[in-house]
Image (cartoon, rainbow, N blue to C red; front, side):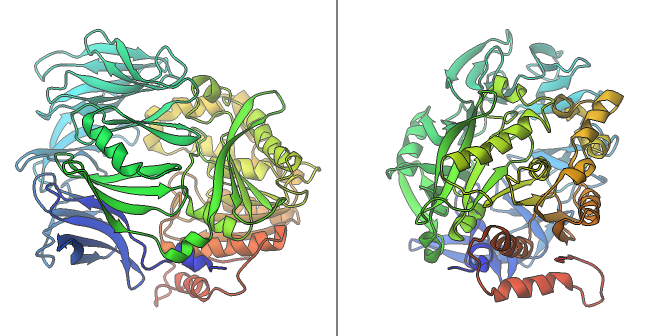
Length: 629
């Protein structure tokens, strides 16, 4: 049995390949001496040779769109560097900003870059431009208090503006150039989706993912004058989940539909070449584009064939070639799991979509974990998951539930979840567990439940009652006090709180607040049973770790079995491999004690990582704290 460190601390793992604007160089993530690093290479004699390595507290990189220059994000600074002269860095951080996010990169030398900033108001963003070196700050459009986003044309002029109205509707405004007035092109109901991109340089031709006047999201072309839509691709059962464009300001090349297994529909000649290259094997494939050259002829992609770990390729659409950049460690392939889409019937007759992962060699029944995704306006999709693969290698089954309220299955299904927290949404999790028992997949006393963020809320509530359906819960970064969360949501959500309130209610309404409290895990501890593994990031900007601390304290006071881990310098979801490894090891040991699955007797690297992150600074300043109590 492979140790948890072989899954979460593979020093040979690489990911996130991106070609430079002309494809002459490729950058990617990897590790060097245990630290995350960015590598840059170029092809010579058919081999990708490393020419530069960048280390530090890096969390993002990207290429300039007009030169082979790399931009590295280190903490709150941007550095521009020529990989062939790696010793010299230029600070290109946008000047005179406290908060900023670049949304449009300069496409030519001398172009401006565009960014949004919350400096003036923490609730709404203003649109600014700077030079590529971060200087010459210019206000392009000040938010009127209702603008959610802008779309720019090739002339760097905003051509689409999206505004939220007091009724919750969204107005999509268009103009053909800077001298023309804004004209409404569409008014969208609160539950509708309309995601627009331009398909010409002038910003007068558009495509969109839209659910206007239909239940499911379709790929459409959009007339900016009349606002009328022409359907390009749609599906009767699920939303069109994505549209892949190899070159900005051109129509989509491939539409993606995830009706259980992914389907890729070619829409252009390049799309046909792409699908031919990536779907060159039998079975199913999950494909992610990680980068492209400026003209879209070179693409870097990560492909998981039949749930095997991702392999990374360079696709040349011009000469129709496919070059392997990296493959996973061979031993990881021995612990394959099989995931298939399933449906089960909830107690009220609703069909609930889910993904069932089973160990490839274990006979049923197996100890099983019911997983609830976060959001709740999200969904789980078929594809390789290192977390599921790790659990399956220990003999566990996993049922990932797209409970009512999830996205991806149309407006009707999503709205079924509104105001159903702790009620019908929660019933879907319990019904999932009972379905596993009825199918003989799981056995009584061998069921756990897991989730992060809102999924952690559901996992905690699933432990209520005397039926003992679930023996254990794994709860990460979780909302555990819903009234507190709704009264302290991030300020930057200001224009996007409408959907949150459609799910949970208005925190300014005393009746809604009472219901939030009635169904919050923290206020129902006396009803909970079983064992709990809690984790939280100490710098979580979305769900404060204080909720987990309060829940831990209440569980202990009630005499329940609790294991808790808190990680400094981690936020809403964990980034450092050491954190992921320590958490995985604790999950392995916790589930082994509670459900009886397999666990490695000793994992030296996981143990060392735990000690290392407990005392990373010699001066004693707290950095990451991982403690099991």
